[in-house]
Length: 354
Image (cartoon, rainbow, N blue to C red; front, side, top):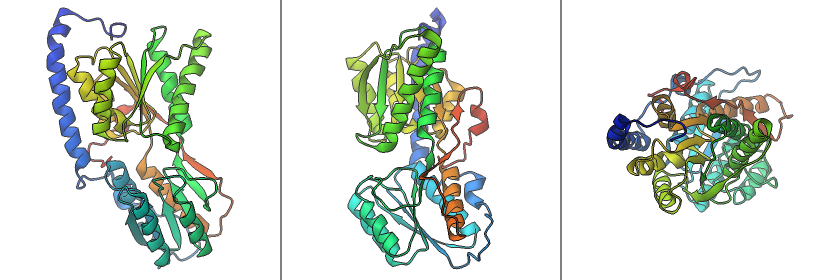
């Protein structure tokens, strides 16, 4: 970015080489993303003993994931399983296989098996309402994990990262970094209508405008385009390729998730624009993103959405419920946290699954 990095003749000479290095490194990241054999960090592997006044032996915790096609979902499942088994309970899991009808059927199967608590990560906020009511009718409390569900559902609490606050932190950081430089922003989203993505986007935009008002006394929010990536590497790559053709003056990319932009980096590198574009993510703290933050200047920051912590909290709340606690807030958040070059090394674990 000309306003961020003064280019020298040497930099111009090295630029094509940098692009090739980035593309090669990104290909390595993709292989790791697709591997289901990678290790998660030690907390997820071993779980944590949680205080309980009742004997948990024989209690069954069921968890239904919308899919296992991403490292985040895999790490979340492993964290839940480790914490369930650490506390002497039986873990039953079901995979929605990225198909809403299959997820509904999978939840119904867990209800039939008589789980004591159901942990549910819904693919769709409306389609799973019916099964939450069926679970309640069967005497099974439902905890919503990671994503959101319609208020009409019967559930105890939603357990997720603070998407609004995380987005605000990232938006504020962006304005401080860019200063008075005019921002031509491209927004990379997950998919249309997703409630978590919507909240992250809201946080990013609020953070930008509030920091501009506070420090500059005005709002200059120039979002030139938005593209959906289907929360995928391939989707981010295709979206960014199209954006760079239609809007060659883009100098900032903001995104609802690291996964939306990891593929976009390849398109940015191939276009020779790694010096011209700054990337800011409202979530998730994926290890590949943290590595970019540590080693480059074009990936500015991301915010923590830890599957390990969410899995631990979900099991902890389930145990608390079985011990008689009922006064849960309707949404339970993990603490907001921004990851930048200054603290990235603290949160980087190359052996983590996510």
